[in-house]
Each structure stands twice: as structure tokens, then as C-alpha cells.
Amino acid sequence: MDTEGLPTDGIWKRVWSLRVPQRIRTFLWITLQQRHLTNAERFRRHLATSAMCPICYLDVEDLDHILRRQPLHSTFTNCWNCRFAILCWLLWKDRRNSIFNPDNMQQEEILARGHRLFEECRFAFVDTPY
Image (cartoon, rainbow, N blue to C red; front, side, top):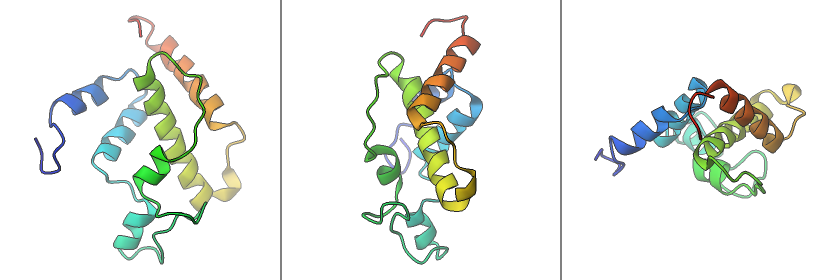
């Protein structure tokens, strides 16, 4: 176990063995280490004037707020680990774009992009079943 109580082997092996693009595995690795610069973390480091979510203004913007408390209605049923990883990465990416690059927003909905990326991964890793 590490200092935060997370298993040092099991969870990391599961993240690195996911059949998704490397950028998504890296995103999950950074997420599990809680190293993303959320507004709460930026505020703690004196890089922001508030820890509040700059989109909803209802709560502190931490990883839990961004990745877990967002209302998502998904019909994804199989290979939930891969789909979850892809959706978390897309949520993080969209949140950062809406704050730091609002003129370059994606037109495609997150779930549609997630489904498209999942299908691309499925074909890229066709040698083994999900």
C-alpha cells in the first residue's frame, strides 16, 4: 500500500492493461494520483482566486465534482472499464477546454465522442475480445 491507502500493484496494473490509447491510461494514472490541476488544487496553490467550479458555481471544482457528480445517462453496457476510462478523459478534456479555450469547443456530445472512441479502440485492439 502507498501512503494514500491505494494498492500499489493491483490498480496500477489494471490501468496500464486497459486497451485504450496511451493518453487515456496516462490520464487515469494522473487521476488516481490526484494530480490534475482542478480549480480546488489551483486555489490551494494560489493560482486561482476561488476553488469554486467556474461552470456551475455550485460546488468546489475537485475531481469528484468533475468526474463523478456529473449527470451522465449512458447506454454503454459492455467493457465498462474501457468506456469509463474514455468518458472520464473526455469529461476532463472538455472541462479544461471550456475554461481555458472556450472558442475551440467540440460540437459532438461527450457520449457520442466516447462511443466513437470506444469503437475505434475496439477495432484497434481486435486481436483479443472485450
